[in-house]
Length: 502
Ligand code: HEM
Image (cartoon, helix red, strand yellow):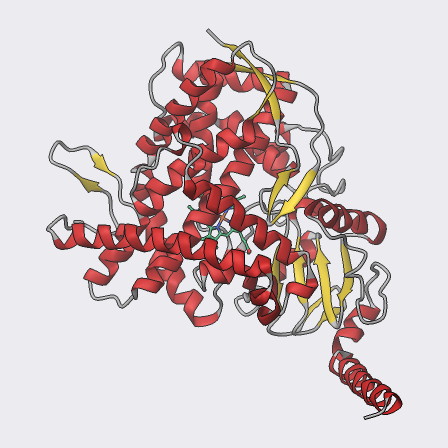
């Protein structure tokens, strides 16, 4: 074939694609007409201006809201993306029992998490949510208090050597704490990462997170076959194989324990051992027990849920905890008030924190909520609409990817005046009254809300109550650079100094 014939053929194919895309995306263009948004370039849309790394992506999404408002649109090639950061739009979207499908972006997690609770949709998600919900009953969560406390003690003792020393990054320390906690909670194994931070598992987990983030900001890696052939895709495959093999090993071991007569009694309620103490039940045990009771989860089904909880249960809480401790260091007045409340509850005692104590930490709860307002661990979550939704006269058509953003909405001065100020008083009962109920959604809301939110709040309160009783946190005034790595992080960590309380 001569050059011109080849050229004509290429033009014909491109023309056909353009024609197909034009007509295929017609309904989406109808939605787009009513919404402002960043400039859209032929073929790529706004994909080229969003940025190529997690810092730029976070910044672009936030800056576009300043420029175009709290509901705006963007095109990623032929795909329409609508960002929503307004409670009037949030409410019907989050409450829908139909529009519960996660967007294509969650597929990047699937090689690792498969279709566990976070990434699945439709009837699979419904049945899993039903099976797993009892594992988050308050009575079950109470059983994790000793794990929160004992792992917090390890951190407190590690931080002794930071007292009076130079500023240090708390993010890494806190991540090891939340990993220790979630390993006990999800799999029932004590890993002691806090004293063994160079272990293979953590290194593998971090490398895997890097590959997932790199893929999500590189459209040329979106098609699976291209990604799988790339060096980063091949690296990801090896990392996932290593993590899966560890999960399978733990599951097999727990299964054997069960067969050897260590039967879990009273599945779905707290277990008591011979001396009447509460015994911890790992989520894995519950899933295995579900099968013993006639359920039909395969080994792969159980593995994907264990991995889902390992991921969702540690990175989110670690981000929430780190930003909260850092905020307290930077806001000494709030820290003093939180400490005084703790002193009223505990006096001088070093005793463990109990569930009764947690209920009395009213001010600390406001502090945590305020920190999650400014620094929500999940700054954006995404859905692909199954059916059209009409809100305020705008018809958002089925197939649109909707990005729901607590990070942007929580800074709307209409709902949170002087939004950049760290002010826990915003969350007193009196000040919450009258605020739109969907203006604050760090744990999402509606049927696909965070199943682990009570677990997270308990874990956060236990650790902070122990840290503040032992140490005074000193701010060093370093402003963080935010980075959107599915979870909210910073490029350089979060720095504070420590002084002894006593
Ligand atoms: C500060 C801590 C946490 C925050 C801010 C948080 C936030 C969220 C958000 C916003 C979602 C919705 C995500 C989406 O729609 O894509 C979510 C879902 C989820 N979270 Fe959390 N989370 C936290 C801690 C936890 C913990 C500790 C666990 C488990 C122990 C957990 C397990 C899950 C699971 C399994 C889902 C998926 C639920 C479903 O789709 O049915 N989270 N979380």
